Length: 112
Image 1 (cartoon, one colour):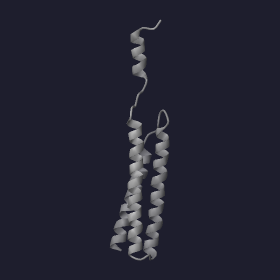
Image 2 (cartoon, rainbow, N blue to C red):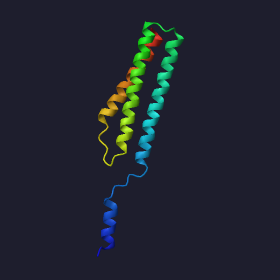
Image 3 (spheres, rainbow, N blue to C red):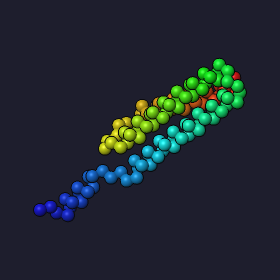
Image 4 (tube, rainbow, N blue to C red):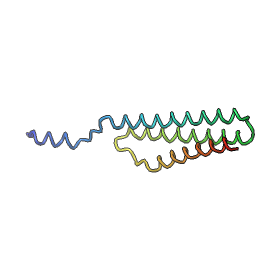
């Protein structure tokens, strides 16, 4: 027969993450939404200055950067559904590179 202490020990060893995974998924979705807004602003900037060779290259790089951000975020959201998700180090590096590329493209489109 099990005692109440055994029951309490079993309850406390079961991981209960609460709302944390859902908050993390929503944060990834907000990251993609802000990346989408940045990409659309870069598209607008490229078209408003006239779509020359530099603008077309910037649009292509922006699209690739946004797609990379979208794919990384979707993979991370799916990984969060697992019982023991993997580390986030490579994911954060990819998001950082994507954000830096979009920022540099914006600066280049403004200055060019």
